[in-house]
Length: 563
Image 1 (cartoon, rainbow, N blue to C red):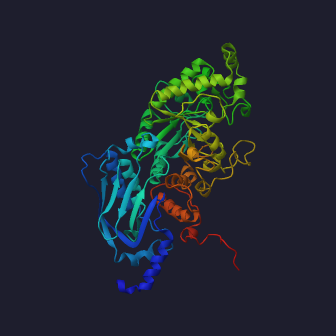
Image 2: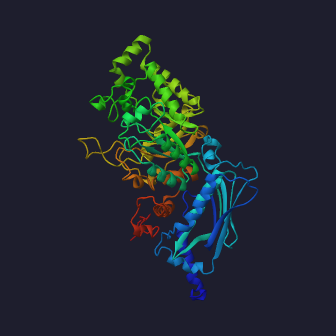
């Protein structure tokens, strides 16, 4: 069939039909200029490092190899009726792209992606410039760091579709100038309520990297289990894990940290203290007050009850040593000692605590202040910045290091109060970002009731969040970004992917591109991302019937009444 078989008006119609989904990139670049031409990917396509680069880090070389595999093997049909069949007339005269040239700025410092990803938040350089011409000349990617180059490669892979064995892109040429709006873009995974094999965590890390999330907040242990094997404290996992097979060995931890780093992700480990620590009683009973006391609701927010006996100097020293040991296993400059949901009634009824308070002349808050200062200092001395839940700032009268970062979780309304205290902020509001909400009750006998944070938090709801709402210009500078969170009372390997993806991508774009995005535009791009995630082995859940996904806008409600 020749090009003359397609009249000009038909080619124009086909071109206009593709404009409903101009570059389904996620997250949307900060600056994006597009054209109207198609481009095919050459079967011999290659990525070539140009310029005066004498050393290319191993993780960047591996990222380049994965990029070449993805653009050739995703084989994603466009998410439109016909899955790209209508694009074929545009490809007859399309040029071929033979190469992407990767280069670095004059003042670039060449270190590994992992080293760049683990720098202090404000020091990470994730910016890049990507240009893809339509005339067959090489595409170019320019960055000042290996991390920026990695982000640009992720964007490049999202340009390409496949139909009948032809890999192609539309709306060329494309010119992108991109960098994140916020330095912290995270996902929290709780591995204490349910254990997740390393392969699950790696799959989450892969998906995170594809949408430019850069922080895994690992809530590793809690009252229910202690799966983390920590040198000098191996008895905690030996007696506190669900089983000998459901642990993270030091080699597992190093593997996860390395895998994350190579994908531009820093791992923020959390050892929640002094609450949420009941399981420690299995190995070190002397350090836990009200262990598994009943009725549990009197002593804890959820079962089992049990908290560190922080008034005890021996428990304070034990905790400081534990946090120090864990902190040395993670190269991040961030470390979370937790600090949420402290149940004071537990200590009111703990004879040892009351005896210590009486003999020392302290009240509970004074004892907590001593505990916090001592345990936090242990990680500060290792060059770590503490990241705490908001109660440490807003509820308790404790002394925090001025660089301490607060996770605002109880409500988005907490942000203003934390900002007024002068602490930097990571948004983690339950009313926007808790992925576990909407599962219903799990506490017997009220199994048919609502969960504590119902209803379900949709991607649209998260996407609508304003990180700077009600903040002054000065207070707005304290916002570092935010994260989606998965507490796993009702989640395991069985439903990990669909409960997280694609919803967690909403905050990825929110904190990369910035707030204020249009949900109708985002919906079509999110469909595209979901299909691409599935192609790459992530079981992302559908967000609309397929009929709607293939027809952008067809399932929208009318904005005005019609007869």
